[in-house]
Amino acid sequence: MMVGILDLTLYELVDAIKNGSLDAEEVLEEYRGSIRKSDGKVKAYITLNDHADGDPRGILAGAPIAVKDNICTKGMRTTCASKMLEGYVPPYDAAVVQRIKGAGGRVIGKTNMDEFAMGSSTEHSAFFPSRNPWDTDRVPGGSSGGSGVAVAAREAVAALGSDTGGSVRCPASFCGVVGLKTTYGLMSRYGLVSFSNSIEQIGPMTRDVRDCALMMNAVSGYDERDGTSLNVDAEDYLSYLANDVKGMRFGVPREFLGDGTDDGVSKAVWRCVNSLESMGARWDEVSLPSVRYALPAYYMIAMSEASSNLARYDGIRYGTREEDEGLDWSSSYSKTRGRGFGKEVKRRIILGTFALSSGYYEAYYIKAQKVRTLIKNEFDRLFKEYDALLGPTMPSPAFRLGEKVDDPLSMYMTDIDTVSINLAGIPALSLPCGFVDGLPVGLQIMAPPLCEGRILTVAKRIEEELRLDLRPPLARG
Ligand code: GLN
Image 1 (cartoon, helix red, strand yellow):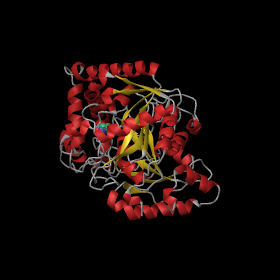
Image 2 (tube, rainbow, N blue to C red):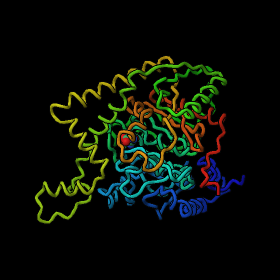
Image 3 (tube, rainbow, N blue to C red):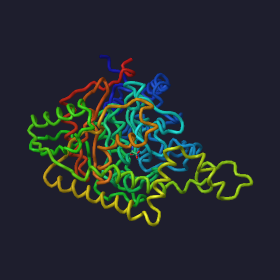
Image 4 (cartoon, helix red, strand yellow):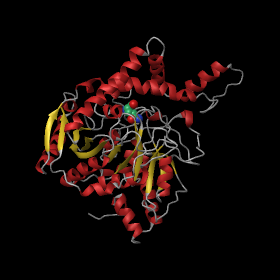
């Protein structure tokens, strides 16, 4: 196999730019060519950046990085894939974007997503759906679908997504890339147009585990402008990659491998468990009984927070204002919100407003918060005995475009294995762990808060063992 520039990982690319064997401008041109060639088929980007500057001396050395379109970029449109923000150009960079630029990386473009990050397929984008590079009739997952596609289809060397209930891990699983949802508070949310503040985290999406560690080094860390940011010491995540899994204890929650899980997905997960065992780790089947309530609790909390967070888009303070000559304020407000938001966003605002209304608040929102505490306690209990938990990221490989888009419940059900992690605030990584009918599937590695390093160790050992070819047909030239 001829290794071209597009096949290099972020780590290799940075290395080559630093030692002078590759020129950062040549790399950028190669990626732009790749976008011209493939993006018409997979539609990863909403906006491309024609002025992407980078500094070859930084730890990202001019590498082209894609950023989800709900993360603010100074002078570059940040639409959240919504008509409401179609023309919004932020006057500032999000903290993570400042860090990418500060590390010399280039923001090559802004990626497609489900509108305001609500969805699991990218079909709820107000502009167009993205397509899975492994099979363009299938969804890439969501809501950070464009970021998953860009990394898998060689249209960016790495990307950022955001994860409220699985939005980094789901597209990582469906597109065959690595995606990490970090501990709540580890990545600054300053400049993230968040839909559910108490559960949403920004996370890296990369070609392999080492690149994930490198991106973590570049973008994580304390930020005083985000009141939820954790003031913890910076770590070198790359240093965890050489560690061993010998003696580690893993739990495999049976709730993650129940009836709704595709057989091929289960097999791929068990293969990873067995290979960890052969490396000297131990494992037990364990149980997280409250996880069966995770989906309703998650959707109740996410919708309630969305209804309150999105109230600001009234066309007066924020958002695209519709022509309202002669209308009173209430009609103007309804027209702007009626036209600016898509169906899924409206559904969530309406349900969330209902759940928060007086008389129902205790029965729905407070109840969901109690379930959240139960789930968190169950994870804490297991982490006293186990170093990490293992299961699938998604119960199946990527589904077809159109298959679930008109059936919200079946779309929500696909998040069954990811949402409990956000409710508990813990980190979890999706690692490509095999294929089912030629489509990639992901192993989910979950660990206690701030144990991202441990997750990277486990992921690295499995990745080395599996040695999967993760170039989708489209990127094989
Ligand atoms: N699919 C989930 C939802 O629709 C997760 C979204 C996300 O993580 N942003 O809410």
